[in-house]
Amino acid sequence: MKIFRKLTLDHKGLLNFRFLTWMHKEEQEAYTVIKGSMPKALKFRFKALCAQYGLKMSEVLEVLISEWVKADGPTSSFMTNTLDEDRDSITHIKAYIPSSLKIQFKVLCAQREVMQRFILYNLIREWVETTHERNLP
Image (cartoon, rainbow, N blue to C red; front, side):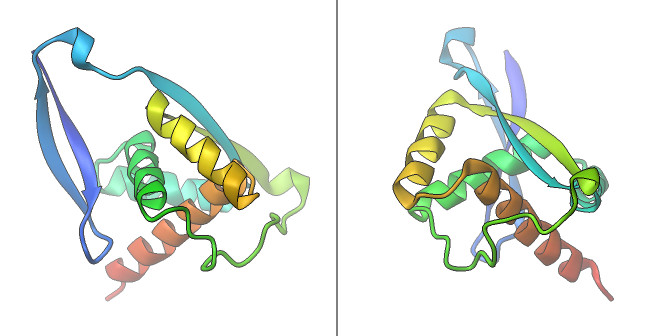
């Protein structure tokens, strides 16, 4: 028996935990890697906030991507389609998400004619900004 936490976003965009128990290994979904690029400073802020809350970056990205897919892939809040950083300040990020979610994400990005890394970058950027703002005194 394996116990793990499942993250969800509530109506205010806050992360909530649910603990789930798997009885059989067959019931677990296969996970696959998803990769993106972003400024190093953003990745380190993302990593630090995840550590502060005891979260794994993959868990947060799974929730963010899942919520984006459920919302039918909105892109209107995203400001730019390029990373306005020089190559030396760009780093890569990878996360493990359910294979079925990656397929949904890939299809929706293709339908919206946006690159997956652009959506990942903006989802992380928005999460870091809103999470950071909630922590301000």
